[in-house]
Image (tube, rainbow, N blue to C red; front, side):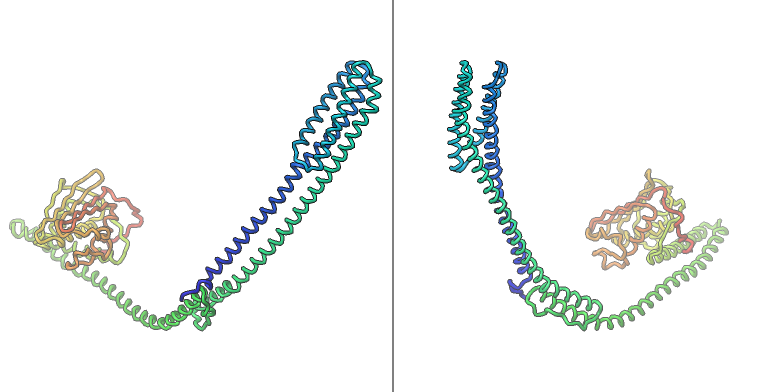
Length: 527
C-alpha cells in the first residue's frame, strides 16, 4: 500500500519536531535579543552613570577639602606648616584635575555638559582668587588675604559649589531614570520569556496528545493483538486496518500474521501425524542399528573361534613340519592370513564404534611404526593384487607410544584411499623416518587428486570430493583417521593437485600426552 506523503507518521512526526525545533530556535533568538537589550541598559548604568556619579562625588569631596586647606594656609603659623599645606593643596588640585578628566571622558547629555561647563568656569575664577591670596600672603599682606578669603574667594567658591550641587542632583536623577529603565527591561524580559515558555509548553502538550492518541494508543492495541496471536488466540479483531499510514500497514501485516497462524494451527495436526510416523521410523532405524551392532559383535565372536582353531592347527603343523620347507611356509602364510583377518575384524569394530560417536582414548604401548606400515602394505597387496606399493624406511625400528590397533586402522585407511583413487598399477609410496620429536610418515599417490574447494572439508564426516562420485565410498574414513591421529597428538598435513595426486604427512610425537584417568578400555571391548 502506497502511503500518502502528508498522512505518513514519519512526515507528521518530522513536521512536529521541526516545529518544536523552530520554536526552540525562535525562543533562543528572542531571549538573546532580550538579553542584548538588558545588557545594553546594564552597560549604560555601569559605564556611564556609575562613573559619572563617582566623578561628581570626588569633585564635591576634593573641592570642599581644598576650601578647608585654603583656610588652614591663611592661618599657618610657621614656614614648615605653610610648606605642608602647600603640598596638600597641590595634591588636592591634582585630584580635582583627575576627577575632571574622568568626568570629561564620559559621554553626557547636553544638559549635564552645559552645567559642567558653567561649573568649570566658576571654578577657574575661584582658582584665580586662590592665586591672588597666595601672592598677598607671600608679600606679607596676610590681613588682606584673609579679607579676600572671606569675601571674593568665598563668593567664587559658593557659586561654583552651587552649580556642582545642581549638576550632582541632575546626574543622580538621570542615573535613577536609567536604573528604572533597566528594571523595566528586566521585568518585561521575564514576562515575555514566561509567555514564550507557556506557548512552547502548549505546543509540546499538543504534540504529545497527538502522539499518544494517533500513534501510541494504536500501537498498544496492535501489541495486545500480537500477544493474543502469540497465545494462539486467533479470534481477535485487529483495529486501524483502514488507516493510510504506517500503523495501517502494521495492522494489515497483523491480519496476514493472524491468517498465517490459523493456517499454522491447521498444519500442526498434519505435522503431528507426520512426527508420529517419523518417530516410528526412527525407532525402526534405532532397532536396525542395534541389530547391526549385535551382528558385528556376533560376527566377531563367531569369526574369532574358527580363526583361533585354524591358527592353532597351523601352529601345530609348523612344529611338526620342520623338515618339510613347503609345508612350513604354507602354515606360516595361513597364520599370517588369520592374523590379517583378525585385524580386519578389529578395524571393523573400531570404525563402527567411532561412527556411533563413542569417546575413544589410546593405549600407551610401544609401537614399531615401520613394522606396522609393512604389515599394512602387505595386507593391501594381498587384498588388491593390482596395488603397487613402494616402501622406503630409513630405519627398521622406529617406535612411538600409542595404540597399535587404532594406528593400524588410520594408516590402513589412508593407504587404501591412495590405492582406490589411483589408476590400477599406479605407484603408492609409503615412507617413514625418525626425527627428534618422533616419527614422520609420508603416504604419496599419483591419482586423481583433491579439488581445491574440497580440501578444507577433507576431514569432515560424510563429505566426499566432487570428483569421486563414481567411486564407492562413505566419506567417513578420513574423518575417523584424523580422530585417531588427534588422539595421538599427531599433526597431519595434506598437499594435493587435481589430476596429479595427493601427499599426506603425519608427524607422530614420540610420547603421547593425555589424562590416563579418562582412558576407555576400548580394545578390551573390541576383543
